[in-house]
Length: 120
Ligand code: HEC
Image (cartoon, rainbow, N blue to C red):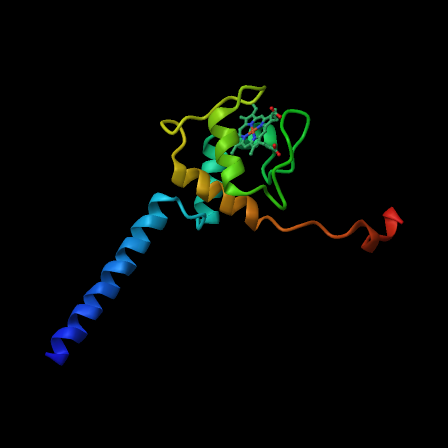
């Protein structure tokens, strides 16, 4: 009796964990792979306008360091009506975008200009 109860509690916990996992997978939790993101950033031509490290330039906005939240990036990339081409899910999967976000987050900040003698 007692072990039965224990068993059902265990399966309930397992079920909850499983549902939690599925739920966050569906909500596209922002955990991504920076390495895959770098590849996707290059393969999808983001670098052509935004620079290899997302530094931005005359053709595209600065994306990194300190990228905007994944929700913002998703909304922008899927719906752009401005000079940037819009990327639908057929062209660029949600997972690719999450990985690109991870890549952008992994780009380190440059040194503070105050620490560079030539600039002071
Ligand atoms: C043809 C050039 C071009 C390409 C290719 C391109 N972008 Fe852009 N992107 C732009 C420009 C220009 C803007 C600014 C557009 C605007 O403000 O409407 C922009 C803006 C953005 C923004 C919003 C920045 C902000 O701070 O508001 C994000 C995020 C972004 N791009 C991500 C990407 C990603 C990810 C890719 C690759 C999948 C990509 N872009 C490919 C030109 C490009």
